[in-house]
Image (cartoon, rainbow, N blue to C red; front, side, top):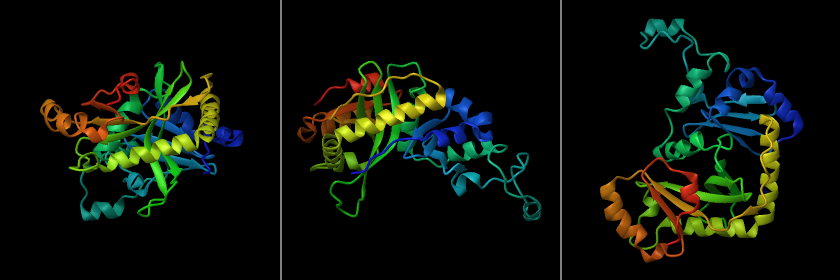
Length: 281
């Protein structure tokens, strides 16, 4: 497996000297309105569950659906004649708020739920346990059913113990957590735990580079990771009290197939510290 997280100095310099960074992205990161994730000499910038921008080879990219904005913020409805007289936006900096608004409109409920955690508890927050990375993709150890990647939703980081912990997040409505037999999520978590156990040294090294990049970009001195937990936590969210006391209790919390798994069920307002220390069933 080749798993890397790094950002070379020239890429950092190009990022931090860009007008989009200086006018919008830096302050939005620090205010936790957006989340910056380091990849392999590139950056993903996320907002409300969507990838707002990708920065690679010294330029920003965004999805066409986010940038498909008429360059006239005063018009809510267009006639066919008015449409011919208006044009699409031509730059990211001057239309940043419109692009960001569009990004927040396309995310599913699971991605939105995850975003509530990283918007409040990013590595730029003043918490001991923070969200360090999201949407972490590994090359699949076993390429079954055409799946070439294993993708884990959240990586938490305990700054005090310098320990990493991966989390798989599922909305209550996701069919992957429900089954009369063995739910699909069981197999997913087993695969992820095998990934971590097999590639522990490489994962820690990659996130040392990741943290060094974060420290350089934001002029910080956050500690570098030294350990990674092999147990992957399952986060289930988005249910009400009746659902928690009924189906959730019966089919998950009291279900023998989840025995030995770390499961954390929280309707909303998810705190990484509570998630980290949740019990093993």
